[in-house]
Image 1 (cartoon, each protein chain N blue to C red):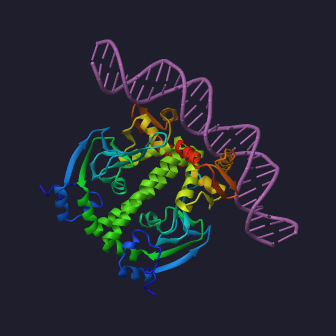
Image 2 (cartoon, rainbow over the protein chains, first blue to last red):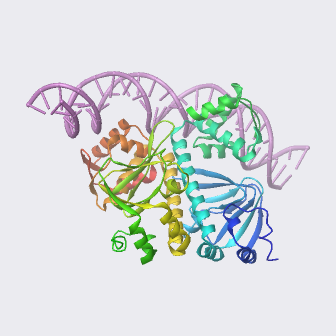
Image 3 (cartoon, each protein chain N blue to C red):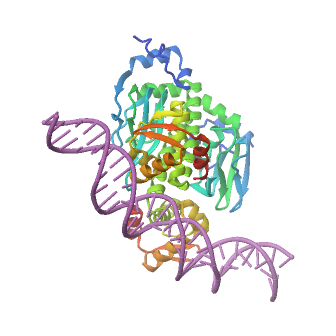
Length: 225
Length: 225
DNA sequence: ATAATTATGTGATTCAGATCACAAATATAC
DNA sequence: GTATATTTGTGATCTGAATCACATAATTAT
């Protein structure tokens, strides 16, 4: 029973540095839960008491802005989830919601802290990952504030194709409205631009199914905004 | 001579956890440099080979976006500077420039890494600070994408008054154009809105001198956008 | 000092994208 | 299966902010 985590095939770069002892320790203080598409995993404004590890699935980080909801980022497994909101403050500053069926391991926060105190390799890797996350956050923020909506939308379609699904044909895990929250645009603008992309033969859409037909053009739109 | 860092009065929360040995170690692998307003401290696109600690002064982090420069954040001493770009990738993903006379200690990256490996308290504190930074980055990003320019500008004037200068009367360390890069607006829009604020008796401006006359109203504008 | 830059203020015009207003299509509930 | 609610598409209008176009300060260089 203490072997669960040790034998788990879904380790992140950091958790690969955990020792056998630490992993069996973790097995004892860890709960695995399944979430369905749309289920809330972490809720903004509530106390953060566990470390969440995304074992399988796809989730979005989102937060309430001054005017409306914003989707901050999309994270796929395997990955620790929302460490900044777990350790940065007592209260969660953003929410995490499954956008595809997902499996989360909730790890006791003190067990996790003991890893940080005792396993320098683990901690260093965690540190590096936080640093890399910040770099991509900064980049994402510049892009979303400076590109126009069509550019941002193109960028995100490419992100789903290249980084999430590894295919130019996929089913969007988000509604038009959520897509709007991801690219800082209204639901209507997203609809319109997607229609335009289709008219121009760049993509084909059938409800939430997306097929990228002209990737070069989509990349060009993403670059130039 | 090895006592320099030990006796330094400008320690960050994390560096207070360094032991005497570590501090004298740091003293030996550390160079202190002064930068004048406008001087570039870290340049986007170059190799990152040292950890920079801002001992005294005020700096801005900024990066080239797809359309123009963006000021990502303002950091005051004492604080480690740009750890994410130092450790997140070989190459700096953003620049750091002094916006007031500043003193930087450049610490050898391997010395710093040895602290991370050997001093759990130090590392944990660093970890916490990175987490908190990410939370404020997220918040800043939502605000800058959703608020209108007047709201963002109000927010940033309040930030300078409350967090940087601790006074409702201060000299802006930025030009109108830089202020634009901070709030994602054109130089002209910043000028106009500042004029409006003055007409409405919310602030008084004399070149870059700012006096906040009606803080409640400024806070209201910041909240509502 | 005088000339040459660079920073700033303000009006006029333009435009991307929001909002409003529907209609149509799906999905969910009863 | 019918009714109710949610999601989506598309046109018409409105608006905040960019851009363009100057004039005027304020620096910096010579």
